[in-house]
Each structure stands twice: as C-alpha cells, then as structure tokens.
Length: 396
Image 1 (cartoon, rainbow, N blue to C red):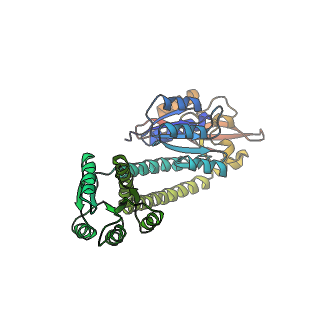
Image 2: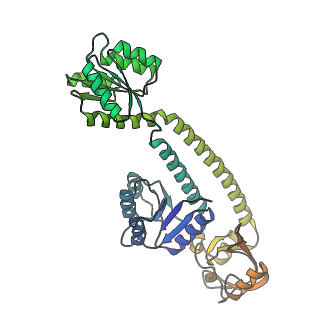
Image 3: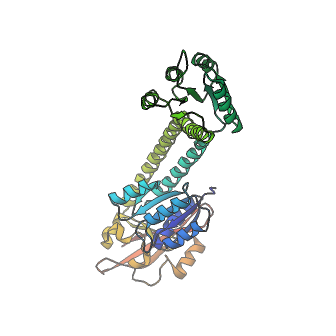
C-alpha cells in the first residue's frame, strides 16, 4: 500500500470524485477540493502532500497561480496540470514553472495513474542522486608550501580529505595511483604548469573537477583554463568561503555527472518498463473496448455515485448522444423513471442480491423520444468487496 499523499484541486466535483476514486484504488491517500484557495491553504498550513493535481481554469486563483505559489513554498512538490482548454502558452508556462506533466481532459484514469507513478519514480531517482554519499577526495597542487598548508588547513577544517603535491609531476604521479574527485592546482608552477596538469588529468579521467588558482590573474589565462575544461578559476590569496563554496558547487556537479550514466540507464529501464506496461494495458483496453462496442446490447457502467463512467456504441446510437455528452453525467438523466436499479430502493435490493434481471426501464433519447427497454444489472466491487459502481445491460 502506497503512503504518498495526493491533493486534487478542480472546481468540477465530478473530476474530483473521478480522480479521488481512481487514485484511492491505487493505494494513495487522496484529498480533493473544489477551490484553489482551499487547496493552497492546505499547502500553506504545511499539510504534507507529495503530489498536487490541479486544473487550470478555476475562479479566484487559476492553476498556474497554484503551480507558482506551491513551487515557491515547496520546490520538491510534484505538480501535475490538467485542463480541458489546452494552449501552447499554458504548456510553456507550466514547463517553465517545473510542472511534472500536462494532461488534457477528458481524463483517462489510466493515463493519470501512470503519470503519478512516473512522477514518484523520477523524484525518487532525483533524491537518491542529489546528495553525495561521502565528501570528495581532494588534491591540492602548489609550489609554494605556505599555500599548500593554507589550502590543506581550510579543507580539513570543513571535513574534507585533502592531499598535497608541490609540483605538476608529483601531482600527476599521485593522481595515477589514487582516485581524486577534485584537483585544485596553481596556474604558475615550474616544469608542468596548471594548464598542462589540467590537460593530463582530463586525459586520465575527464570527469575529475579541476579548479585553477593563481596570484596573477589575467583574461587570457582564465579563457585558456576554461577552454581546457577547468571547472573554476580563483585568485589568491585564498578566501576560505570562496574555495569551500566552489568545492561544494563543483562536487554537486561532479556527483551528478558521475551518476549520469547510472541515472540514464535506470530511466531507460523505467521507460521501457512503462512502455511494456502501457502496451499491455493498451492491448487489454483495446480488446475490452472491442468487445464492449461489438456487443448487440446497451451497456452502461457507473461509479458509486451513479455517474456514467462508460457507455458503448449501441447505447450512444440508440439514444442519439455523443460520448462526451454522457460521460460523468448522472445515469438517471437518460431514464424516464424517477427510480431504477442504478439508485434508490432497487439499488439497495441489488446490493443485497448482487444482481438484478429483467428490469423494465424507459430510456429517453437526446430528442426526447421514449424507448421501452429491459435491463439486467450487477455490482462492480473492488478487492475489499466495496461497491465501486454498477454495470447495466439493456435491450429493446
């Protein structure tokens, strides 16, 4: 059972109920609100949510405002945008504000569920790779003993392991024997200067971060250092805050690059897994839809609130509606009777018996015509035997 908490924000109660039911069935803890201000209020109060699914078009504050304000408060929060009115502008804006995905209505519950799974997997990988497991190993290279002691003292005070070398040749020999994540090298040294050492290090391990330091800074030497792959170029005398901040920034970059292949492989595996699952799901869905629409009888299924979740082609043709005119609408709208087995006393009877047969109902077409039909119905239940809706089969 998943422990992740999801907040759904949409001014349409039907959408809130659909997403809450779908994601609750997947094992998530879901709260749904029909007001953007109420949803933001929950986040402001610090209620813990892993994911926010928000509509764009809402009164007072729209979904883009929700996205921006939520990200300002909780940068790690996953936000999925849903909308019935997609546009290039909102797609670009949601991407710029780091929304995870952008899904258009009418919503496919399987698409939403898949998106939630992908977002959580992506965030898990990001968190795993964000913080290095151990401090970097550092080699400081300078022909001036005082600078070596100074650099070594600053680094050890910050908890870093640092070794020293007094020239480029010794540094290169040491680098070939041991692993160093970061090399801090003086630019001007006899024999092998900092640029030549930089080139030799990059030939051995291109991912190693090299920071060039110098007491004689110049535009030309700075350009040359960066051109040959230096991570940074700092000037002497060494400022403790500057060198520590440079190392911290650099090592985070180094760590991410070092894990890039691993991350890419895991993302490729995840993508392939998702593609395989989606392909299987699509085949099963296509088969089910083929059977559903090939049936000679009327077939309608509802959720536990009596709203239509699926309706086959025969029913649409008989009643004269389009699919989106009925999906999400109360099923009793298409019947002339005030009560039927989809609700009320007859529904309670079916709950007790599990199903019902030969139930007469009068269907009302989109043009107001009346059609006499006979129905059978059965409950749709989940693994815990909780009623999640009804499927009804009718014929003229």
